[in-house]
Image (cartoon, rainbow, N blue to C red; front, side, top):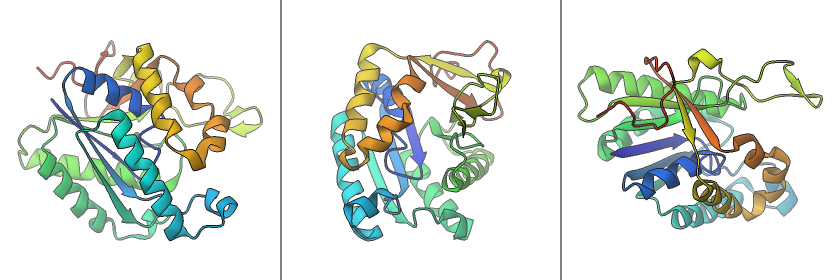
Length: 238
C-alpha cells in the first residue's frame, strides 16, 4: 500500500501524522511526503535574525532530519511562498500536486480537513487544492487512487474558547471515519520527528501537541461514511 501525505509547511507532518507514518512504515507500506513550502515566513525567523529565505533553508535541513528519523520512502519540499498560498493562482498548485500524485501512484492521499485544524489559510488552500485534484484524477480513472483521508481532531464540545484563546478547529463525531490507535513506538516516533525542529521547540511545547494527540489520530474520509470508524487509513480498501 502507498500513502502520500501532502501538507503546506515543514512540521505539519510531525504534529500528529508522523505517528501514523511510523505505524504504516513498520507494517511495510510506502510512505511519501510532499510539502508545498519551506516554511520560511515563520515568526521564529525574527528571533534568529534570519530572512525568509534563510529561515527556509534552516527548516529544509530540519525536514531532512525528519525524513531520516522516520525513514520515509520519499520526500519532496517545494518552495512556494509560505503564508502566501492564498495569493497564488490555484491552478499552479493543482498542476504540481497532480504531477506528484501521478508520479507516486498512491492508494491513499492524506491532507488537512476543510477547517485545517488551525484555520490557517495555507492549510485551507492545501485542502482545497488536494481535494480538487483527487476528484479529477478519480474521474479520469487514475490507477490505484482510492481514498482521500483528512487529518482532524474530534469536537470536545463546550466553549469555542480554550483558556481564553480560540481553540483548534474540530470535526463532529459523525464526520470522523477513522480513529487510529497509536502504540508507544508510534508516539515516540512523533516525538523524535518533532525534536528535529530545533528552531521550533518553544512553539511545539506551547502547542501541547503531544498531549492533544494522545494515543489516537482522527481522520475524515472524503465522500465516504464509515460507521463505526475504522482503525487504519487503508482499512476497507482490500
